[in-house]
Amino acid sequence: MQGAQLKKHIDATLGSGNLREAVRLPPGEDLHEWLAVNTVDFFNQVNLLYGTLTEFCTPENCPTMTAGPKYEYRWADGVQIKKPIEVSAPKYVEYLMDWIESQLDDESIFPQKLGKNL
Image (cartoon, rainbow, N blue to C red; front, side, top):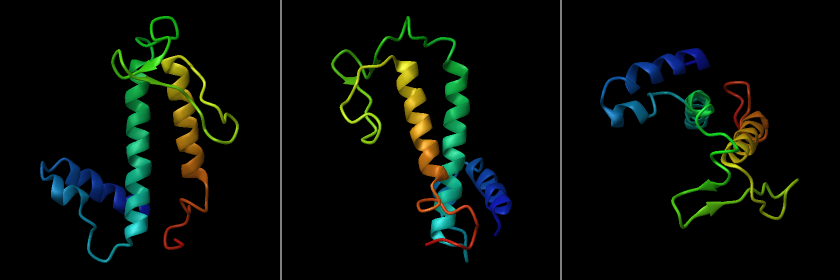
């Protein structure tokens, strides 16, 4: 299947209510391409979802990225920012989404041409 056909298959099976079928590799498909298409789709869906929350989580009312009162996330990408820094929740998500997108755009990790996986 080509990328668009894989996407149609994902959309058809994901809404079926059968999660096992939704994530099962279609017969004859390359595992790496299947994972890549699903990963990109998941990233796009999360990005859209986050876009709906941006007006509610601002640097003023979300000054840190936390998971409850005991856990605070600090950003470090290991390249440009090596030592973790404290940033607002929106800035953390911005850094994270940019980092993920750079991984998805890296041909050595996610080849763009179907059928050309490493």
